[in-house]
Image 1 (cartoon, helix red, strand yellow):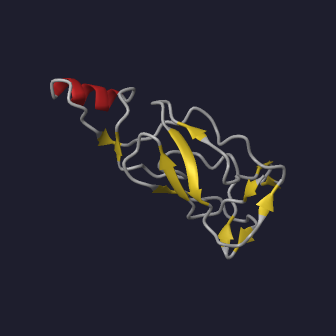
Image 2 (cartoon, rainbow, N blue to C red):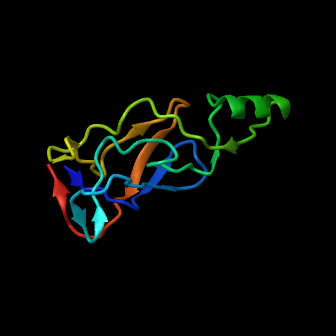
Image 3 (spheres, rainbow, N blue to C red):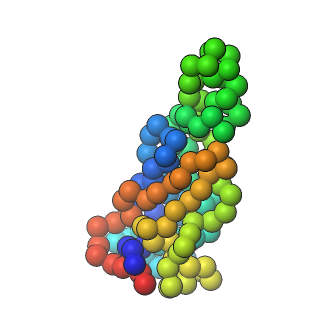
Length: 129
């Protein structure tokens, strides 16, 4: 059981060099402290999930190419996330016909990064089952 996640939640990628923020773009959702609640489908790169600064994953073609050009010295490149599916596992409450996003959900990047929620976006003690 985790806390509900809202607009402005702070995210961390295992291969990213900076935190990111969750954007909830669909209106007409329940709110916590005036912030829209997220669901597991809020995972669209550059719309819901902003970049994580520079990417350090050798599975990212731009990082691999830049590293090869630097004679094997790891050369981070700008993060452009590519997600392989929605957040999982999701909560029991439905928000806009999809499970609620909880702070224990994870998101996976095609380049091997694991995205976690470091701060749910609000300070209210609300939990989802």
